Length: 192
Image 1: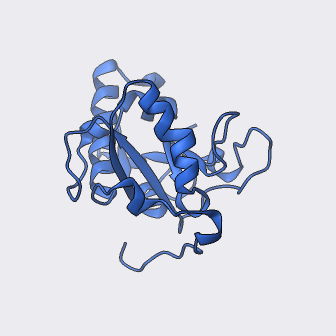
Image 2: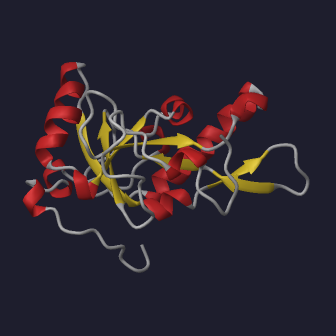
């Protein structure tokens, strides 16, 4: 469902948890973690738009971990090991404030003057084999009316904005907490 510039996507308002429980919708002041695979980016450097699958963004399959609810054990079991089993190489992880990601705007094609709408939604989406802190990022736009060229351009713009919004690539152990008992309450840092 498309979003406008001032509201949440309709799907963001309710939990997408397969058991209809969980931690509830992802709040603006939460931090999310993006685990990066098969990247040429080195630890300490900014991500590239190539680190974000535009197909996964469009389908709502770009996986994130809610920092407040995901331990390193969760990440190892549900994210890292399955990727290693598929032959992927773990490059590290990056963190972003949900509010910052939700501020990404996408142009609405065919309007003069150009107008912008929300670019991405962050959903509390936990499926059967996911960890309880799983979230998903998807494009906010209904791409059905766009030509393939317009879709490609829109997705590339969103991927570039995501690369800008996420922090530098860090080692996995520096991003995830050790256990649920060590998870602090997450409070947004001014200016982030």
